[in-house]
Length: 240
Ligand SMILES: *[C@@H]1O[C@H](CO)[C@@H](O)[C@H](O)[C@H]1NC(C)=O
Ligand SMILES: *[C@@H]1O[C@H](CO)[C@@H](O)[C@H](O)[C@H]1NC(C)=O
Ligand SMILES: *[C@@H]1O[C@H](CO)[C@@H](O)[C@H](O)[C@H]1NC(C)=O
Image (tube, rainbow, N blue to C red; front, side, top):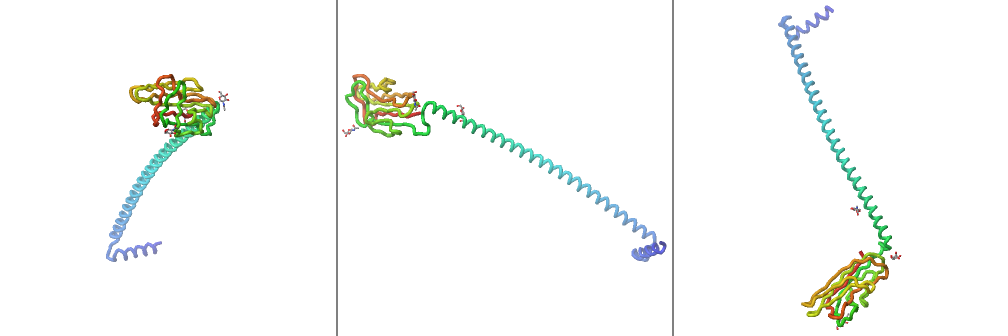
């Protein structure tokens, strides 16, 4: 032990110059120790700073992810809400569709078939019309299901259902004209075309018809017996 101490001291003496005294060596060692202590304190402070900053970082990250989760939650909640609404809408639509199907089948119509629709105008003047004489709109534009006849001027309902009809008849100058839309020969609505100039009388009607019912336009009365042609007069109808 004694030998080892002597050896260490000998070495130290060699290291810190052979001229240095024992006090000088101890002083040197103390300074080094002091420096080491200071370094340690500095490291400790650095560690503390690192710890604090990483803790803050962790906190910030936690906060950010919490916000993100909150946002995701809100967005998915909204999406679920929208989907629910969509499903409800679809349900309601299907319910409405089946109600409509039922309604139409009760009325005895076939919704899968084409619906009747027609439109026709008068090419030539219709002159010398007698009381209740039909006005025959010969120029047929449209005739779905061929329910209108450009020969007789009659529309014959091919299906039970609700229909809309409209007619316009023009008079000749200086001569008034009265006409009407009739159903199976019974007057429904009348049209008066004035005698001041060439004037158009018009009227419309919505009817619930059964298969075979007939609708047409006819002259009414005995005075004013000429309907104006040249496509100034027309008759149209369709199933609603
Ligand atoms: C279903 O019918 C009701 C009542 O007629 C109507 O208010 C609603 O808008 C319809 N819904 C859809 C989705 O067509
Ligand atoms: C059309 O209506 C009449 C009278 O309401 C009814 O007797 C007939 O069965 C109906 N036709 C169809 C095809 O439903
Ligand atoms: C319209 O008048 C012209 C000329 O008189 C005639 O050729 C034609 O057949 C008439 N059309 C109808 C549908 O009466």
